[in-house]
Image 1 (tube, rainbow, N blue to C red):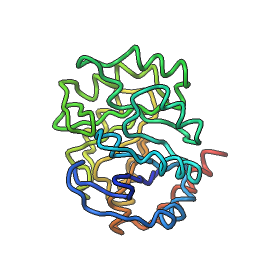
Image 2 (cartoon, rainbow, N blue to C red):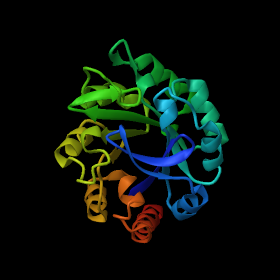
Image 3 (cartoon, one colour):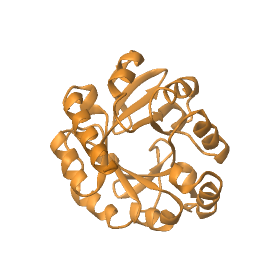
Amino acid sequence: MLIPSIDLMGGKIVQLVQGERKHVEFSNFAEWVERFRGFPLVQLIDLDAAMDSGTNSPLVAQIVQQLPCQVGGGIRSIERAAQLLQQGARRVIFGSALIRDAQPNIEFARAAAEQLGSDSLTFSVDSKAGRVAIRGWREQTTLTAIEMMQALDSFCGTFLYTHIDTEGMLQGISMPAVRTVKAATSRKLIVAGGVSTLEEVEQLDALGIDAIVGMAIYTGRIDLDAALETASKKTARERT
């Protein structure tokens, strides 16, 4: 299934190439909210919060009231995650908070699962050159995605794997990397990082994997009506 992505920076919707260079920017929120309304899930990321350079909290609070969202970006406390869930988020995404002293933060993950419920948690594992990157992808650790996922598998309902090396490039995600991380977890897997065609989304869906798509939507590479029809059919199948 395709999951549209809304990335917020400076009060606008943006798309970055590999988390660094801004490629597109929009301020017409109402139009995009309406276009995404029929999707079962939308990903909403506060990039400013992720990079410790500000916050788009008022916008986040508005959008989660209008769309079914999993929300991430700078969520580093259970209290903030609980607040987002209370505001209407379907799931919250933890990333940097899952690493402490260069190791998976098992204590934090366990506490979050106990207090918020594992089904409401998506754990983000972002890989750059084979190693997990945190804090808006600006800090690289020595951990591999596999090590992170195996250590945290018991505490979340979903993993979000981002292949930073291909993020925003519109060249397709690395399928060998996707298959490797899929084999490492028993949890639901969502992937991101260069997904650029509906055929690729369907290929991932055949593996039981959902795809985050941003750049390909905002540049018109993927037809939203066709994507919505595909998502609706999958939702209907899952309900029967």
